[in-house]
Length: 483
Image (cartoon, rainbow, N blue to C red):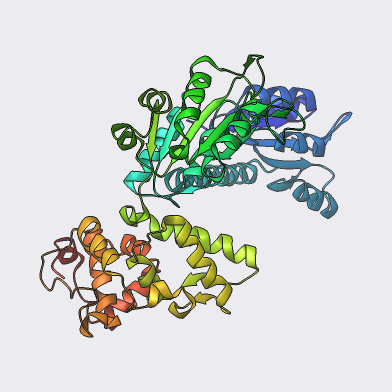
């Protein structure tokens, strides 16, 4: 499909001449003034706009300004018989790609337009790649590239525009509140209120008042009317965090609100209608609580219209490197530190630790590393003691990585076990080689992809392979697991 070009010039013979000269190579549109140019830009996709500086009563600079404000702005070229350095500089400042003077050399103009088209193509490709990366690794503030997180992202995107109640389950620190934020932000009501209630922090009486509000004099200390969180969130989203902590009496009242979308304040008898999208979050297994008689089955079904279960970090090891990279940038910026990376030993500790506190613990550990580090690289000594005590590796994390994630078991020279069984196991060279082997086996010998998984540049990976005596291996052998 040919590129589209818009010629803006108040002289008809110039417009027609350029159209005839360029239409064999491009799809050419013409306009005589600013109004016509903007009409074309609004109705058609234009890749390159070539405008004269003087357009009768209009100014070509203003045409460039307006064109660059379009949702899909064209690459802009300025042409004029009044060529000067000042005009050229001003056109560039306004965002013009280049500047040409009349009388025009058609061959030079055609070359310049083709360069502009290539520039436009590269910009679009770059934007597309950035969008793909963003979609692959994150959603809102959630980060992940593992299959588990991709499924979470897909569910969020599917359920967010609906009005369905969502139940988010997962261990503490897995990011349940971030999922709730993402659902709200991607919903049809992102500008409305998002209200979060931490149910475990309040007694049953206080929680009832917090959720439904109360009238003046409803109980001792109720000196004035209070609007509850359901009313505050009207038109928006209410997140009930730690849902498994709500007692049986309150569960009955909550069931009515979810079913009828009405409530009564504590001590009142006026029925109040509410339009609220409810998201419940818990680190408990509500289905098991129902089976044990600790949670109402009917309320569970009301809440569990769509369920999102967040995997613990130990089950999504593929996400560790993207999470580390994301948190390092964020924490370095927040603390005004030049930290950019982890040392090999520190990264090893991070990758093999079990992370019982999940993403929250990871962020906290990296924050300590950033604060304690004075240079650009976090060393293992900067990390919390839990990652360093008893050797670099926790056995649970190593077992999960070696077994569940990598499937490493056989193959020639299958690598020494990484654990706490003896001095040999803690030899850093052995551990480093074992980790590189795993990464290469996992990527079927693709060193570029393996270096990405390890958080290294490809050149660094190549150097380490040579240092460890593995640099001469053929990538076909790596793909067959013969390292």
